[in-house]
Length: 256
Length: 302
Image (cartoon, helix red, strand yellow):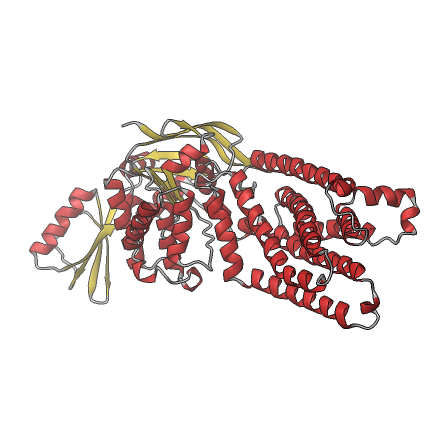
């Protein structure tokens, strides 16, 4: 039953400005970054593996920003535009509604990833890293983005307001991205190390560094980055289930 | 006749203020039931509780013998045209109905036939490929009604279905609803338009401050409130002088004569027959809205 919701969401992104503008913006950022990395005198002095790591981080951050904004609006606009009432008059289950919306948001991530592939191919030409580069961006990006989307959906059900959800989601993104920007010196501090260890964005960047710069490309060699991400995903699923239960108990339409 | 909808001591309050207060109601299968009440009386809350999208604080509800917790089974039996009519404005009318038909899991062939049929019924066939954002309010109302009927419901709940429609649009909707009711569909019609409810519904419930203040046929309600039944008759030419003593008011406007007749429908019919036998052309004959207003005001007086 989730399929009609997923189909509607994907079509809405195609019909309206939302999806198209996001993809054009992503392509512009990737083009500009790749161009600078390949032509700028100072940047082109970087080792090619460092250059790939820089591009991979930009792809992940751009995707995160776009997906976070999209996910923050996708649930509550149904209630704010008063379309949810009609949807839930059908036998549609709340779980199918969430699954359809989740897959639609992940489709947006997939579309951004497809846009990024040519840039990854061009910048990694001449190295043996193209496969690992694309594969790990896909794997780490999918786990990290899925977890963050699920947390944002949980916030949507708790807040029942797209504005509040968007604000909270951007704060969350900022909170997760900040430790990832700590310099190596700052990370010598034990608190920063703990933060870095549990922070999904940091783990994504760390794993990409491991793969692209240190040539440690097997899953076993990246397990210490992957398991915190998987735990984060599991926690996000638990949080969402709790939020959905609370939402169901309150009723689909909130007391007015 | 078996009960289509039963409510027993249903309560719902918002921030401690009761919106529905110990509501007891039984709507029989195949009935055209009117739900009247001033704004904030609890009509929309009751309809939302019946569909399962709003949880009651207390009480027992059965729909076609199903408990309210069986939301999925109930959703297949009922159709609701809600007061809030959010539409996916970027969709065409056909795409909009396709979405809901697929949510009811209708097979593709049946889906197409159902949508064709519904668009025909609500006179939107010519606009099927037009985006909803270009629709007038009346067209959206009709599309909303079509959506409520996608699953061919046995119980149709309508919340102010003719709001914003022109007289022709209202008449079309009334005709369609009467046809559906004749075909066996139970209709719960919520409106604040008294004349509309009176002309369509066989039984009426009047809600005030979330409480059921009266229930019954129009005649029963008149009897309860001792409100006289009156009819308006409009004829051409000057007022006749030799009519029986049932005329309550005679108004001459635009060279037509408007007569208010009390004493029931039979008497009003006999007055009409008499007028026609005397050569007066009948322009209008209908229940007097003022008398319905009196009835409504009497029942919802604080």
